[in-house]
Image (cartoon, rainbow, N blue to C red; front, side, top):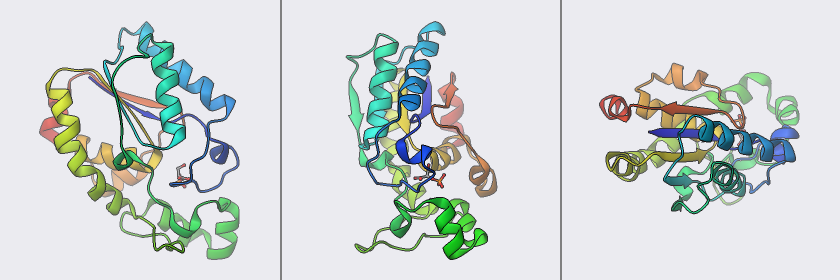
Length: 202
Ligand SMILES: O=C(O)[C@@H](CO)OP(=O)(O)O
């Protein structure tokens, strides 16, 4: 079983600011969203035995709260930057409304959901398109994730909006347009009971 979770609401989700690799904490709403996922997994008898998260605090905290709430606090957890949110370059920290005023709604929409549109780079030259994120996570999906799923472990994977968009494209075999249109709310999750279907789609 694979359980994909988008982290709970962060301070910058609440403030409508681009987060990317900025290490923003969960709000109390986000913490409760995470605990709620854990309680639902427990009720459904879907307690993970392995967890994978990004290295960003909002994902790590979400995983910890989920695992605590479903009685699985001691399961082995892999934290990897491969599961980080897309790097949003110079947009990080900017309110979305300010970005729209400065660059126009159409350009901001392309940076947010266009597959190969890379946001403007930050001072250090960083900034990833969705295609860059897909290339970053593909080796993780094909070697690390599938190896654990093949061992039969129910895996909890906590990541980010754009990273999960690309991860779902890979494991569900979605087109670019379908992947770009995916919207998982903060604290939202998708559960795949039969992971052999995912292997075929990959
Ligand atoms: O700020 C971000 O890092 C992401 C996810 O919340 O934003 P967007 O949905 O605009 O890609």
